[in-house]
Length: 473
Image (cartoon, rainbow, N blue to C red):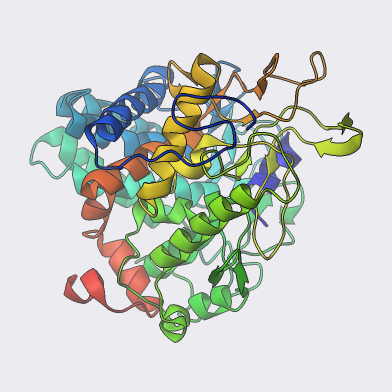
């Protein structure tokens, strides 16, 4: 069950500059000056989303903008990851980033925790999925989210490694990061040990689902296994992998999960290249290669376009959890088509939930896995759809060339002849774009996270061996 399910409960036949009307792929060397200039622009604009839209006093990054709803703790994790990237790219100074990071960690450490249904931000070290933008307390009746807390901690632990200076601010960042991670009681969050529950509410207790099988939550068992204070049993990883499904889709054999965010989120912070657990050793690949194959399969699916969605092709592809135009069934060329608003779209041998909506973060979050197809796709999207898709903070969340029903969209805008375009940027989709560009260009996030004693301990307890992990202390 993807994290997007919680969000749901809580709430081209066109010409272009880089590809022909038949959807053929553009020929662009990902290392060319043209591609690098594009990545420069995309990095800076995407970073600016986190820097400009996050209140510096609290660090409560909004879930989306310009539509304001609540803060997403996962978006905060991506914002914390963004700040050191901004330093390394020269967008902000190290002092500015350290001040913002320290204020964020201090706010989360001091935020009220407890079992009450209101007036608190978390419990047992975990935080509620969404927090009120003004008070920072639980938003309505959302769940205490284990996956979103893990994504928050990914950013926290990255900052712990990056801010390694001797001055008081950076020392305080490391101390607070340690405290936030060590406070999380993973053992408490086990409804069915050794698995970790998807969440908890004071009204109903633990959700009736646990994290098992391949998806975006790989980070949970690894962080839970590495905890020096509240670890889960060492059998937790074998229980996690027991839910895997191995199969083939468009010529690619891999562990299946339909939306691409499941192949990306944990990889933002953990370098899986060259390290293997028992499952991957038995199949002769690693999780990085698994994500690469899932990316290649999605692009091949879009090229084949079996359901004849407008605009799909080798140049424009990518399905993941994202916004969409409407919850409605509408006639397209005489055929009823079901559309959705926020929805976990994807394509795999496991399932194909697809309504013609493409999310740039699907390709953007796979830049590190398959730059030769991801970067040209993003360039094609920008040049084909222009300002409707690419704006102040880079790519808006999603677009749907098939949806050309003026007046029928629940949000966003319908542009005559081009389809539906979102107007919002989503923090959990901006984050993988920025972080994976950084990992592709210079291993930035991975390089520091390979030093994390908690990640190292978790991976080793899970049975990972090989590559950089064998040399880690």
